[in-house]
Amino acid sequence: MALITPQAIDCVLAMGDGPDEQQITWKGSGFLYGRYSHTDEAGKKRYDTYIVSCRHVFEQLDTAWVRCNPRGKDPAQAYQFGMDGKPRWIGHPDPSIDIAVAAANVQMLMDHGMSVAVFTDDTQTLCVEEMENEGVTEGDHLFVLGFPLGLVGARRNAVITRHGVVARIRDVLDGVDDYYLVDAAIYPGNSGGPVLLQPQLIGVEGTTPRRRAGLIGVVSGYLPYRDTAVSLQTQRPRVTFEENSGLGLVLPMDKVNEAIDAVPQV
Image (cartoon, rainbow, N blue to C red; front, side):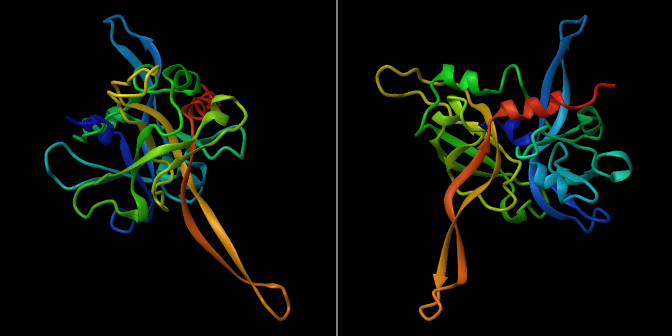
């Protein structure tokens, strides 16, 4: 029994920078996200689609490449997005919020035979109010998807999935903080990747089991632990050591929607 659908894996993109397809440095993760627009005359839902990642990932891109897999088993392909290969992105209106989005032509990728999918906001996403209604709390299991350390896969785009738990979220649910914490292995390259709530069929008495995986946030980075060595003679700091604390910073999907709301309508 799978806990993550293949479609969720196909939503995740490697994001990189380079002069051409043969010289790309992969710097982060992103994913395809659809914001419900309308239902057409045939009764089919239509979505405005975006690449979602962190502001600091987009800021590193002089040119903008994403990498995805063709249908079947052919090698992965890289595509430039934005006019003339230059990234065209919109950051969250609050510069302290590490979220940015760029319009994405998903149909073009599909027409080129790419195996891509889109997280939809109305059926697959849990914002803060929905997480509170679902009873999301500390200790709930989750998955972090992305490309840590630039490990995108040699021949095929190979998303790496890490397991973790919600470490602290009630301050976000109470509306007093923008980021929540997860206990998961987060490394450079994970930034911009999606966080999925794991389905749970069992729980303690008085709680409701969850039968579906929901998109609940975007990885911003890890929380570092710093220790400073002080000189015994001068009592001044000499060296600062930094380690990964094992805690990751995650932004809820509300912040993604706020960034999309800031995109100029044409």
